[in-house]
Amino acid sequence: MKKLIFLSALLILLMSATTVDQKGYTISGKVVGAKDGDTVILGYVDYMSIIPLDTTIIKNGEFLFSGNQEEPVCRCVSFIKNGISVLGSDFILENAPISITVEENKRGATGTSNNELWNEYIQQDNNISMKMNPFWEISEDTTKTESVREEAKKELKKIEIEQLDFLIKFMRSHITSGVTHILLSSYYQMLEPSRLETILSDMQKAGIKDELYLTLKAKLDALTTTAIGCKFTDIEMNDPEGKPFKLSTIVEKNKITMIDFWASWCGPCRAEIPNVIKAYESYKAKGFEIVGVSFDNNGEAWRKSIKSLGMTWPQMSDLQGWKSKGGAAYDITSIPATVLINQKGEIVAKNLRGEELSKKLEELLR
Image (cartoon, rainbow, N blue to C red; front, side, top):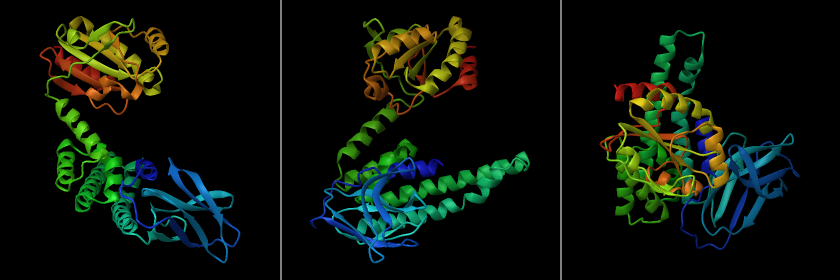
């Protein structure tokens, strides 16, 4: 399921900033199993839902779309089957003649180098994914012994590593392509800092210093300065009363300080609060303190939630939502998230919740 969501997200991202000289595009092709008068859709996929951008009908067994696309993007052509829109083929839409044969659960388009490269990536990636199926079935089969299921999970992990290795090798081999641009945009969070650094070095050597490069360079800098063992990055924002408040004033006074990144609108964050409260009550007397960093935009909702949820520890926010400078300082891309800091100002753990958090605090506060 994760793979499907990732691929769905791919379909709405820009491929590159390079325009094509030809004026306009044409998409021509056939739909296997369709008949004249049937509807064909040009669109993109958003979490497995097809968002239509244009429609046409089949005439003489073929369909045709035409228009203008300033920059290459990833799109899909689907068709209506039994009243339901069925994904037929994803491809790179750019100003060039493109040919597609639309067939259920089959991908591929021809006519441009970007499409040829995209087809190559999808085929090889699918070949690796197919190797997971038998091990996935065993790992989920409750009639199997625990040892058998664990062995299957180990095999799955090996294939996941193989898939990631292939992704990195493919991107490095085609570093200037639009396909690499979209793959890197989607999968960079899966890369260890050292591997991301290697790819960014390749981009720099190739003369690529576009917006994606600059964004990922900033993220890499944040990752390498907020890794476990690094000195913490200080944050200054306002508390709920609107007064400036520094993280460092809490760190220097406590044996362990936890930065808790959350938001009043975040369901998983609210669900985790009882666990945080339990840890706070158990370890506060031993030198544990929390600083909440909120990703809220609405000050009233933020303050109301602090009270209603029983969060009695210090809080700060700049009320900039996902643009929070506190979140940016620690490269926080999803919440809830946590960072544990000792009194020396060293980061000692990240992203612990529930029982894992309690166990770590017990270890650190003996």
